[in-house]
Length: 365
Image 1 (spheres, rainbow, N blue to C red):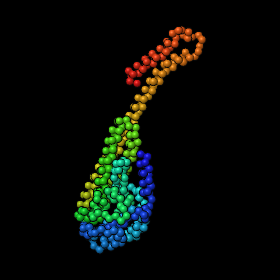
Image 2 (tube, rainbow, N blue to C red):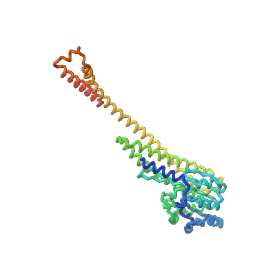
Image 3 (cartoon, rainbow, N blue to C red):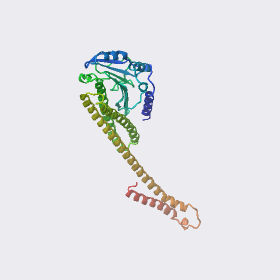
């Protein structure tokens, strides 16, 4: 467990550091014409995508940036004329899901999750989305795809799946015709659905911990604490994501979101509600298991104290007799009896045996 905490601390420190050029991967861009994705372009500049979207109202551009550098963010900020506060957010990872609007640019922070069963840890991947009319940029702050796959330098995404096999953002032409919001919905849907396998993994480990607790394993408490921390992290991420989805729903009428897309968004909201509910139930269940474990530990300690107290009382009887006859008084008639020694020893043994029988009947021994 200590090793797991060290790995976690190192990963959190790494997220707080601005990405360097050594971790950069080329931007992956897909141009879309009337819902039909065009061939993948690697390393295309942001200006080219904007020019493509301005050429025709049916044009749409999706760009994926992995582990961005300050230089690539500056290039994007210049092309998109981003607000300085938005640029600052793009340069720093480690944020909870949120939604902000800067003029015509919608900024979203999303966090996907996957469960690493070997170390019982939830690993999050952070995505920053920039959405403007007919253009979407997805910044993968952790250099990972939505399914947790690392993006290596020079990586080329599979056709129709620029965010991994589990996030096919371009296979539904009907959604792509609805504009950039259709891409945002598909990414949201992929991320939310990805939380269910995480909860399944946590649920399996919870059941193992329950058996571990009732078997009297002393390591159960630390395992409960560790898993509870992972569940709380999931709850924080999904609760914040719920607020993001709710704000998207509130802005549907103001920003003329098509009715079909609003129905899809409601489906995501329903799935997210299930995730939050199950996560809350898991947190409460782990809390109850911890209380049961504390009760069982206290009960076992009480049984041990009974045994210790019983043996202390048994040893006290011979000690009391030995202490009386060890004071070396001259006027003690028993000292001159021929049977004094055997009587004293017999009294010690008999008294101890009597106490042992009494404690045994009371199930203290």
